[in-house]
Image (cartoon, rainbow, N blue to C red; front, side, top):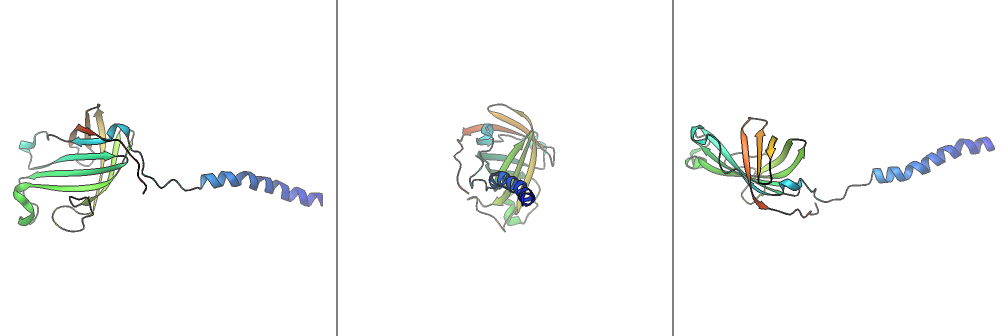
Length: 172
């Protein structure tokens, strides 16, 4: 009988020791919005685009970072009509996107969806629909400006700080 006790005692101790570890390791994360980057919290505008007078088309960006969420307004200026005449709007139009962002090292990752002006999902209509997934290299940042470069088209975007926002995390 002592051999039987030895065989089952060791596994029992191992099981009892690992049970609390497994319980905490596998417990669900709180269902709450992430904090995002403290220095990005607020409203940032691209006030001008370098060489815009020489470009056939360009887009100015307006970004609002709140916690780990991002709201983007795009103002596109185009000398070439890529859309139906009813959408062209004399070469100036606005688009919107809403999503989340993360900063890893010197790279800003944005995963968003194109929306209407009220930030409700857009599934049809003029301009872009679907996903807006972009990555930017953060080349320089100060308290009132961020210089970043799109990793897809190498265009630089210089954002100016306009308004501070304090992150108040919300339940998801």
